[in-house]
Length: 153
Image (cartoon, rainbow, N blue to C red; front, side, top):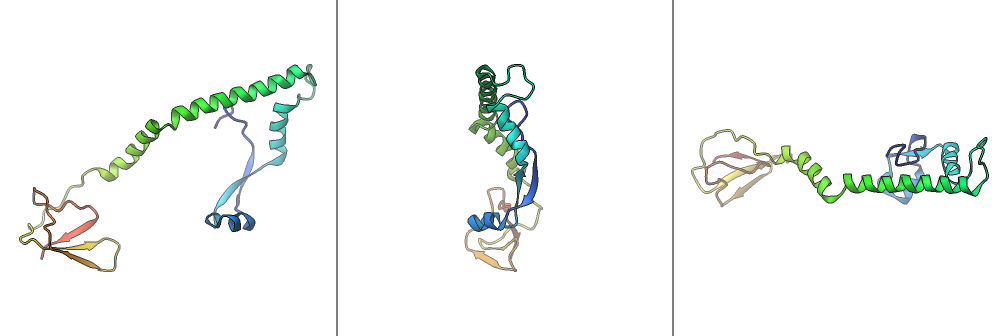
């Protein structure tokens, strides 16, 4: 949002009121922007009413110009949102953000799994262990699951 595509309004960041989070419990503990009402009113009046001291004040032509300015800002905002946040553009942003997580990570060389049973420890659990009867190695003989630590038995 910019002055070119929006009517920006001053605000203060405040905790979501009790009435707000009672209506939508997920908002509890969050903050939102509370608009400065005088500033908001002045922005709305700019569109609907003439400015004081304007030579054309009160004319229908002046009001029409304010509405046209608002339409133009709306058109520009639509073009920018459509260009920046279409599926392709957002997909590229998501791929860039996810690529470090999806990149292959080097696997430390450990002794190769000699049997078809491997013991896996899940990260973040309290020493829970899963025993599987299937080999946990790829064709190269390495464990590829990035979410588990492998120990040979």
